[in-house]
Amino acid sequence: MSLKKNGESAGDAGVASSASSSGAGVSVVIPVYNQLDYTRKCLDSLRAHGGGIEEIIIIDNGSTDGTAQYLSGLDSATVIMNRENLGCAAAWNQGVEAAGSAWVLFLNNDVVVTSHWIEGMLEFAEEKRVDIVSPAIREGAGDYDMDRYAQEFVARMGRQSRIGVADGICFLVRRAVFEKVGRFDEHFRIGQFEDVDFFRRAAMAGFRLGITGRSFIHHFGSVTQNHIRGVERNNSYEAVNRAYYRRKWNLSWPKRFIDRQSGKARLFFWTVKERALGGHTLKEAVSR
Image (tube, rainbow, N blue to C red; front, side, top):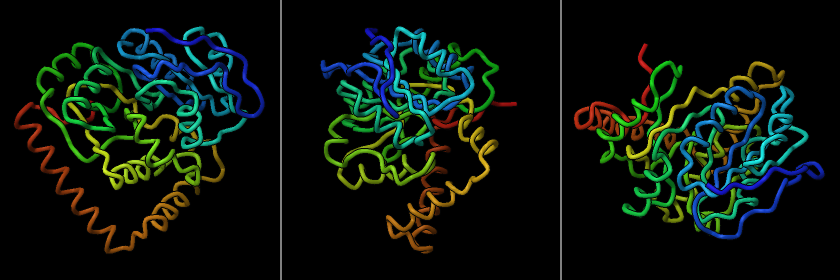
């Protein structure tokens, strides 16, 4: 895994170093806002399971918990320092701008990856001709042997997939998608709905989306969003984003009702099928 060295930020949102121009492999983009312990866990897992990764790009959205100091000491990533929280969509767009690979992967910082996770997504994408790919995800406390669980999971669920959907926690995007549909809509403030909006635009443009059981990650569970909800005085951004999304796509109540019902039916079918064939589902929670 050949990764770029860290550098100094410039201006309000300076890029620490220039992007690679090789056009091969995967660029991993990780926005962070505080939650240093989770960021460390995430990067440790990437170091251990970095096959296929050409570069890691971290966007710090004005952290105040020592994250900036930690990132400044890294020699294995490109770091973009923002002086304030510009939100998820803006950070992702900065990552796209800095990335130089044929594929760009967007990853939450409260995630731990496992063996063959990148390779599994790439294999699935090429075999099934999918342009946006997400892995199987398990959510909750990480109090289990993730590597052993992942090996058993992929062995059972490698043939299972969900076509037509992706997950904003982790998703791999073919660069051609950005060239046709553009980048993430920065009208979505802080976080929420920017991923759903992007997936919708991509699908309408004829790109294929999918989730594959050939790749497994663990997600601790919306750590950054929960932190923001806990410290921000004004949490209205979720409602504002939801209203903007509905206006943008002209989603009346009847349309939303139909979408919800069809989504529930599809999820029920997938869940029953996956459990019957592999004993798991592609989106599951840690058992208590």
